[in-house]
Amino acid sequence: MSRKLFLQCLGALLIVAPLVAQQPADAGDLDREQFAKSARSIARPDLLACRNLDAKIDQPRDLNPEEFGKSLTGVWLGRRTVHGISIDMDTAFYIKMNGTKGMAVLIDRDNLKTNTFAKNLGRVRKPAAPLMMSYVNCRYQFVDQYVKVTDEVPMDALGKATGVKLAATTNLKQAWEAISKAGYFKNPKFVPTAKLGDGSRTATLPTGTVTTEKRIAAGYDPGAEYYLPMVVGGYFDISLTPVTSGQARGVHMRFDAEYRGAGINTGLDELTFGFEEGDFFGQAIGDPAAALANDPVAHVGAWRTSSCGEKNGLATPGMTFERFVIAQ
Image 1 (tube, rainbow, N blue to C red):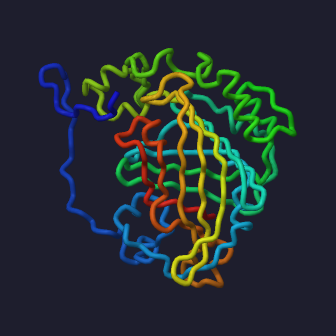
Image 2 (cartoon, rainbow, N blue to C red):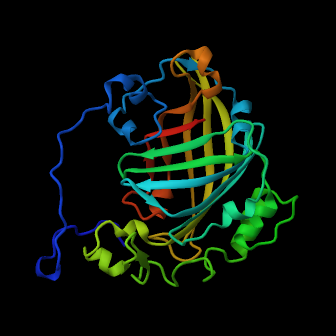
Image 3 (spheres, rainbow, N blue to C red):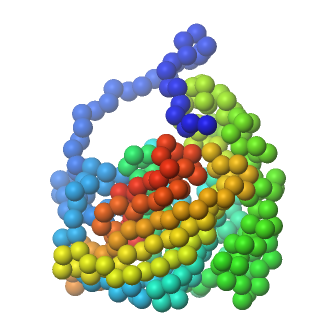
């Protein structure tokens, strides 16, 4: 099923036509001139980055792979906007690094009005450094962000959130296998529809109106596709290796990935393999000495994926994120 919608007016079938304001002229690559340096920064973690794709690291700081890996360890809770629309997410990214090698589990539940991951974390110790991980995709105009809430990796909380009993000594690969084996991605309790792609899902709009997948595809409720329910997940083997860009020394990060549906174009519990990778370097904004406590780590070039575009029902098998920034 393609996500492309027919946005034309349906004439007499529509009782009320939407009102569309005239669009202003292009504002250029800045929102305010006095914030030009911020707007054009490689570490810009929002859609303004899409106007400044030629941004470069202008004050590089060497990045140590072991230190970078240590900063990743913990639990990150997600949030997302697509075309500026906030998506209801119940999403957690569990990462455990051991030096330059690590494992991660990502569970993403959208538009299901649940709060299992944050609720089951309970009171955990705050991270030593508050961090946010931001992915910016310009083609599909979406921003994924994960806020680090703890340096701990509490397996019991992951187990409670997914309904799978996990021992404290369970590693993330074992946890992913247990969650998958338990049928998390095909259990009616979690998966929003019995057969994805058959048009049977429903979406609840901000007004409270309930519409159907078939109505959205027919163009009656344009934009409502972002309110459809979805459950997807991934397991990642993470590797960090040194990389250079000019005089700067950074880190190449690679995820060897295993994904499971149920998304737009994936059937119940459908398995997809792929990878994600990109290069990261330190970037100080303004005075380097004053910025050490708030020094973003931004990728150079694109964070690219081999398969997660396809698993999300987008137009291309692979997907490119123009920005991937980790910062306070």
